[in-house]
Length: 179
Image (cartoon, rainbow, N blue to C red):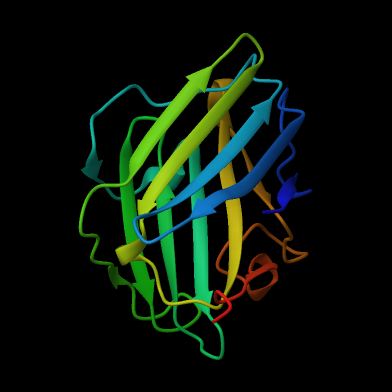
């Protein structure tokens, strides 16, 4: 699978974070596994461990996200994954419309590993919680640094402001498996 070099939205540049990479590691009958790599983490703020639980508002702190839209429709799903191990999953019927909790048969697994200047964040989402392939998708990150400073990272952005729900952010494609 392709590794994406996420770009910060120019309206909200980072302080010390120098790069964010994201990729799908694997997808099988049980799990979708993802990885984000954040470089330049001297001022990175991550939420403390809270345990595996569904929680709203995770995007207000450092948070890693997957947006998935099945081919040929307007409806999409959003998955928010926190280094605290909290998570959220939502369904939308269209652009920011019809928001509802998305069923998830078991908790996603969130595993942060922090080094001196790097954060590796791995996540596993139960495959049964995902829409059927093929998809357009976006891998994104909200990065909080000291002083509450936030930058918004995505494969692609709309021009005027950060908005991960925007069509521009669904920049990657994943095909259905060959028969």
